[in-house]
Length: 421
Image (cartoon, rainbow, N blue to C red; front, side):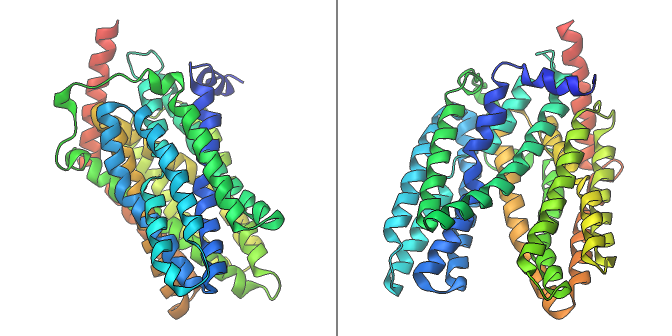
């Protein structure tokens, strides 16, 4: 019960309920729009390949423009950026609906509208994770709750990828993909606006001008580029899993392969959620870099185990167990970003994490598809595991840039703690 009390203490932080609950509602569009867009464009064109191009345009535009929004948020505060994009993104989705009419001549407009929609998606995830760092500084007296707060954020974020597609399916069942896009626009507008106008975002304090990012910004911060390599390793593995698990299901059953694939991915998510919840009850490790490396190693090793599973039931059990390492690894990933990045660059840093994750996931899925076609499903799992094990090696290198950056962060925290006494 004492361990669960840490979550109760996080909930009692002023403004925390809005970040935890409304923050998830505002981000349901992440799990809704991409699927609804795919279904809509396929319905209009009759070709999944053209729909996939629209989806890729949406994702790439979002990944490219997200760091720009993050840098502006670091300079003028998250509220103006969140409110502006909360309005612009739904308008772009409306433009996409208007552009989506039958006929090949509509394709250029569809692609443009998809790109604008992706570029204007609110940087809500970066703002919320930056807010948790602000709420749990050493000076606030809540630093001991940072790991729990980020674990709660990471674990709840899994809901987006479960409820989002389910909501889209529900809209399609009772109406069509257009209704799903409208629903996505509504939750994005409402949820983002509530978070943006909440006390946490409105109480944001501007950073001194000398702390503002210039040039490459956080990409020049010691330890951050290496962290991005770790993000890439996880992203590659997750993208590969999105292709490899359905391919495994197709090869393992003559029945409903899509349902089996959905079930397998769902139990993987359940394992991650359970692991993340448990991890949030633990005290932060003294050496977070080493713990991060071990967790990445656990994720990588789990993929190698998946490759050896010959029956769906065995793979399901392995996915639950292996999934338990995912949310803890992502929690520490977010914690490490906050430790090594100056506060004046934090929003941009988190947007770079999202950008790298999206790009790496797309690359991982593409490579895994080629491996499945030419080498078989087990080798695609091995490829995913190898990517994360490389990331574990980067994180765990003694004297590496991540270790040096964490050591500097520890010294700074001790200094601040001494000054606060």
